[in-house]
Image (tube, rainbow, N blue to C red; front, top):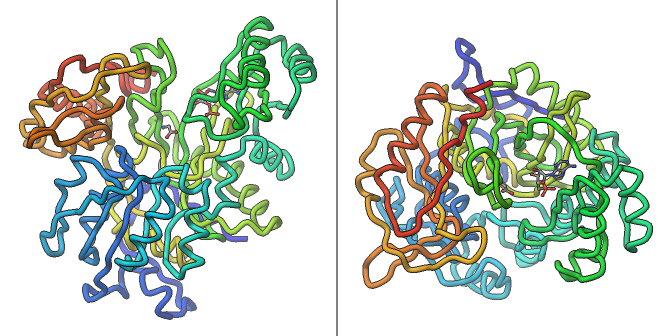
Amino acid sequence: MVTGLVPARRKGEPGGERKLSDSQPLSPKCLFASGAVLSNSHAMKILVIGSGGREHALVWKLAQSPHARRLWCAPGNAGISQERLAANGHPVECVPIGAEDLTGLLQFAREQRPDLTVVGPDNPLALGVVDLFREHGLRIWGPDQRAAQFEASKAFSQAFMERHGIPTARSGVFCDFASASRFAAELGGRCAVKADGLALGKGVLICRNMAQADAALEEVLVKRAFGSAGDRVVIQELLEGTEISLHALCDGRTAKLFPTSQDHKRVGDGDQGPNTGGMGTYSPTPFVSAAELISLGRKVLDPWLKGCAAEGIDYRGILYPGVMLTKSGPKVLEFNSRFGDPETQVYLTRLENDLLEVLEASVNGTLEGVELRWKEAASVCVVMASGGYPGSYPKGKVIHGLDAAAALPNTKVFHAGTAWKDGTMVTNGGRVLGVTAWAPDLPAARIAAYAAVERITFEGAQFRRDIAAKALAR
Ligand code: AMP
Ligand code: GLY
């Protein structure tokens, strides 16, 4: 088994040169395994699926590749449509095909023949877009439907973790209210009740007593609040500690661990109010040392890779474990089978490699010879959201100040919910912008991100003022 764990490069450590094992065959399939063998004549057409801040970050980084000669995003957003390719100045083209319209995506890809399709969100992965494209001879990056179960079924993930000794919360999987309630009672009602399937990020209910646990179980199993996603529930003991996001790029045999990051899921300062898709992130987390990151990889990724090998799961894509650092060690809360949003925004503003090359290596099974290199910098992303989010919110509010923010150094404003209306940029979603800045250290990155946020206005805009503050207070 190969783990290939590479922690973030530390100050003073050598880095920069790429490693390609001498035994690595230079077949056409692995031409992109090392930048050393890639020439600019490898012109590529790329299709990115998705429309959020994560996809803007993916497009922005892919557009910097000297190999990217044409880039489409389906369906994309207004910010994505403003990107241009570094190689030839061509604009990125947004095509009006939804991320879950597999028929439309396939038809487009069969007509345009992208050399690589990159999948952003979880839903198309769970629907089997990777399997479908492969059946038609189209190269695509992301886990296939079986591998995507790590996110699409929490019951699958929980059972896998238990089979393979991956540290996780004490848990049970249930289909009926009575046995679920009995298990919740064994935990004193302090538990997380999770709908098994995909539920737009809303399927986890945190309970602190039996009344809340029974109400949550009633909601999922009886009232069917999440439809068939709630056919089964996973109940986990409630874990206390610090939550972090891990990301690892995988090629079926090797997993390359990214530096750590931390999301801020609650809508309000001080982690108050309802859960959201994520209101801001930063990377790295200063409270996890390089040695601790290696240890996390050994505890989580080694058994995960072994388990995948034993069960014949060929995982090519990003594995994103949500991890709670508890007093009794790290415990995996869940696995996601895609890049986090807004984790991607802080990762890709730190990644030095050509993203296209590393995604190629992930598809080709040649990641072992690739070294991921990260800027000696911290990155902070502050999400600006529509008033009312994560509840209902208005759309069509004019956004001011984007040019002023873009003029700041080491700053990138990623768009999530934006659209063009009569030539003007307007809001078009709950999370609107991911204002991201990087600097030599976390305090400076934080100041820079908020300096950019201060330049941007739209009616009803809300954002947290404490992104990364907890890390600095520790
Ligand atoms: P998940 O989608 O499973 O990551 O859950 C959403 C959020 O609920 C996580 O990011 C945690 O903040 C919280 N959560 C999930 N499981 C637990 C648990 N067992 N204990 C405490 N908090 C949890
Ligand atoms: N940052 C949370 C998520 O992507 O699920």
